[in-house]
Image (cartoon, rainbow, N blue to C red; front, side, top):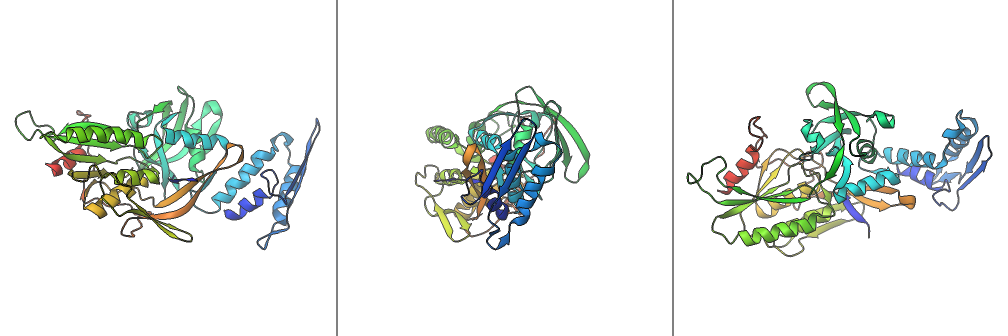
Length: 419
């Protein structure tokens, strides 16, 4: 059974499949090699679904016959390139073909460990952008923020100097990630602010948890004895990946134990800068708060599916506030929206990213992969937030203090609402 992810042209797929190197029974690809040259001829069916395919095979054979640099004629890379062109023709940045190296990068992302700079990538009006910088990573330390646009990726050691127009998420991740200690330069522009600038980043081993639990006072900044000194469970969910479920279980067990104390005041569920991941993860976490019924609806080509809670409901009687921001996307938007619609939970922070499509990750031959948009997801009410995002009930912009790195006015507002 395929694993469905929220992430981040069909005709050409048929064209490539018939190339023979990926196993279309009617295609034919013949390669003759000598010490001096490569002669490649290819043919396939004259039509596919009534479309004349002669032009494709004509161009394929002309390139192989006439292109100056014979060494550059590499059949597999040509096939991969044509498949990428097919997915690009759909004009959907989240539908993409992943060659083996890119597919491996995608899996690393969900596992939570890779060499990189700590940026969760997405698209802002079809331009590569930052969904969120990860905490305590080179990107965050360099001042990169949610919503920043990435115009160019440069890696001098690898000979890469790539503008990002038309780039896929998988290709961008592959270019930005690399060996620990190596450098990558990103050309960044902040929306509605100034000119593009180059940011040099040194890659580190990125190994981050999916879930983190901290205990905070209900009276931040108040001296002991001068206010309500209750405890709030600050549950931060960074992604919905391979380790999220087991890490969530450990956090819930601690919350259940501490909730028996008189000082316990409730939970702040922090989904800020959470770019999403597995749709199933949002359903699993929602099931600890919502007793029964629908968490999310999925509208596919031919049918509508409803995903309901899966039991457990261990935290439903505890006061709850949800934190979101511009970096909250897909699965995190599902969870925040479902808790608000089903339980009336207040959402605090800034408008979310607005990614309302579902991708299915399919494994292909040779370790390659295909991420294909298969559905739209809808909130329990049927609302589609793709492109518009969720507006918080209490809108408050993040305003850090230079002399107090621990200050978090959004978190403080959420705690205030629990008092």
